[in-house]
Length: 370
Ligand SMILES: *Cc1c(COP(=O)(O)O)cnc(C)c1O
View 1: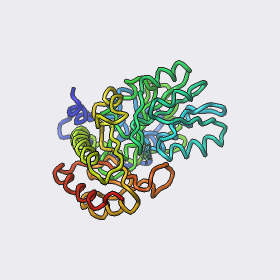
View 2 (view 1 turned 180 degrees about the vertical axis):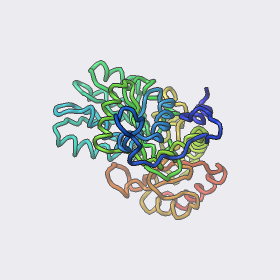
View 3 (view 1 turned 90 degrees about the horizontal axis):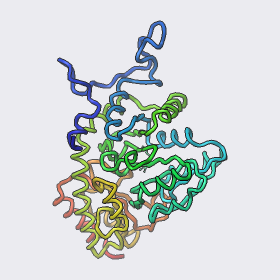
View 4 (view 1 turned 45 degrees about the horizontal axis):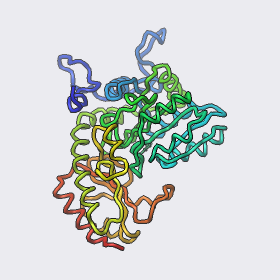
């Protein structure tokens, strides 16, 4: 089946007379479960929930491996770190990965005796950090730099060292890039972003090649309680049906926006893996089905970026990405990523491209060169 059809049907139960296409959320702390707990398919809401089961079945179809839903992307990432890494192990992490992943690794996990080795995503820089590693963590395209690495090449080198490989696949989603098919052991994502795409929930998931490893991660989820609410999971599943349409529109819009940015005098630099001249383009073309919504560009100064935001009507100034609406932010306002003051991360939405280009051109004209 093609992507558009797969996402429409993913995880939906077989038709039953009078039943809805997607059953509504099951709100339950406790379930009826008399006698031997093994006789009840559901017992307690921290262990399992039928709404999770349907969404996890959908994720399994997209990832081509069994999956678990988590309360957030960070809960999913932490579940992998905590399950795989023991005292004395080495974690190879991209130095340009999502800021909070670095923060958690460098603080909580380093404190527990885990060695963190960092190297940049571009140029497959992480190849230099694999000797004796237990887990290689990859993020491609990275957030916010949209740097790309060759997942197959890194997986092969990591496996030769006996390391497991996890890919933070948040920016691409499993529809545009399949880490497990590229050889990775684990695919992790924040479903807060493009997968659900409506900026209305926080969610994450982990998919694994080895069901036994996923069972260990499930045990961690159950015991530490990093579980998602059924309402969020149901909303996520409802949003999945439009994933292919959203990604197609966002990717087509993003390439048009990237081209506008590339030729505008107010813009000092633009990065989008879909641009043929981008350093990540050749690899991204091989391992991604489409290039997604996220790009970044650099304006002359903080003031220029602020003039840009003030002069656009369609761009929501907001953090996060992958949603229906075009959003952008001056990344330096957070600290944490070493980027210039005029550096803007943008997530291109599903607006009519003519409206978007007009609006952005007005913003860039107002920003000016300095
Ligand atoms: C947002 C994000 C996360 C964290 O996800 P939350 O859902 O906010 O917890 C992890 N990795 C990447 C690449 C992200 O963009």
